[in-house]
Image (cartoon, rainbow over all chains, first blue to last red; front, side, top):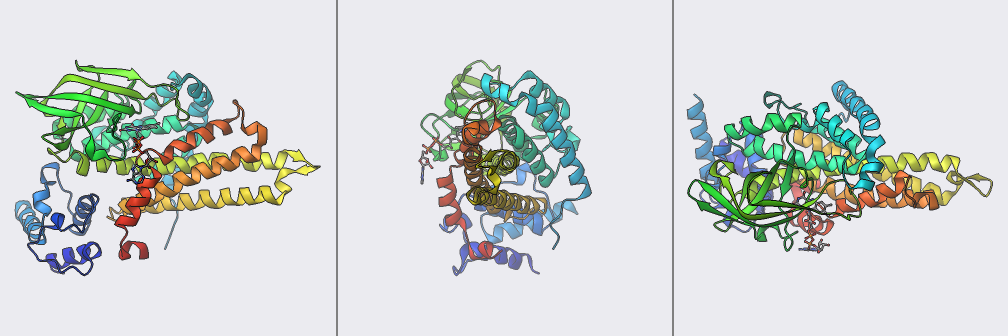
Length: 80
Length: 380
Ligand SMILES: Cc1cc2nc3c(=O)[nH]c(=O)nc-3n(C[C@H](O)[C@H](O)[C@H](O)COP(=O)(O)OP(=O)(O)OC[C@H]3O[C@@H](n4cnc5c(N)ncnc54)[C@H](O)[C@@H]3O)c2cc1C
């Protein structure tokens, strides 16, 4: 499945009917709580089979669907 | 579907049980009375390597998975809640370093935390701040190549003896995590005594008065002290507390079950009385249910599933309530014999209560679980 689709599928449970744009800030929508960041990181690690390093655990990398997808893409390039 | 411990996990459980019975239980009452874990417990816990149960093997730990960690906390929680509390807060520091620490912090502290040459404590609460953790007032400021901490932390488990304290303080109005070594000038430690339960958990109030620590001692990013570092540690804290409650409930159950068979009134054992049977049944079912919830949360942690976070909140909420209820029944079944020192039941009863207060009170769990529940999770 396409990366963005996988991310959307996970986010659906938190955002319900809200139509998320790819560039929408996930953390300022008011839909998610303080636990969300931790759940999102766990999802990314599990779904994409990676272990995020401390320096990569920066909210900026996870702020929107676009950002997450770009970040994952960048990781792939770095690991090649 | 298969809900079954692996052979390895069963073997570890046997070892933990033997360790708890032989090395911890004999000193639990004395530790409770003296409000201090006995030297025997401290020594055996150190040499067991269990202080490093949550640390990866490459840093000198045991590298146990979540289920095995849970089993350890159940067996220790069954005999001494204060010792279990030490494992919890120590582990909260270790896993913070493991997840958010720099390589240097990992190399410096994890091997020592694992072999018990240093003990950890976790300092978030303050005299005026408990449940509303983001309102902490302890402050950190940058000065040259250092941070300067000012403020007071209260209720810090193992604070009297910890060598390394994970402190959450406001840095430019963002909660940030710092590692503070015990002997740092400007840190003074005041013992707290007179607790109702978990009396040997050596609580302290920590006073930071222009306490200067190196810049290298920040852990995690600025402003991420609560939302990342503490949240991750508290998740581990809640998980191990939930398991500890299962152990406590199991101890109450086993003692009550035996007592109900031997204690005779009206020419028959009290266990023949249906009202006593009702209490025993509630105890059996609640302990089993709590253990299942802990297993489930543990399994989700083993597969790194995001749902494990909510499942851990649920397990801690249920298990802590179960502990109080089951301990209450245990006192009732023991009658006067459950209400006097020298019988573990009165200690278990006192120890049970705090689990509804720490790592989020039951009310905070009630608010948070309902708020964060979504269809996908409640259907799972
Ligand atoms: C034995 C023991 C060990 C501890 N160890 C540590 C430790 O190692 N490190 C550490 O940092 N802290 C520790 N603590 C502190 C503990 O985490 C706090 O006591 C806990 O977070 C509750 O805070 P509080 O006591 O200030 O209660 P408060 O937050 O003042 O709450 C008082 C009451 O109000 C209720 N309440 C508050 N807010 C709400 C709300 N929004 N909705 C509904 N009800 C609400 C609470 O549920 C509670 O019933 C320890 C405490 C004890 C007793």
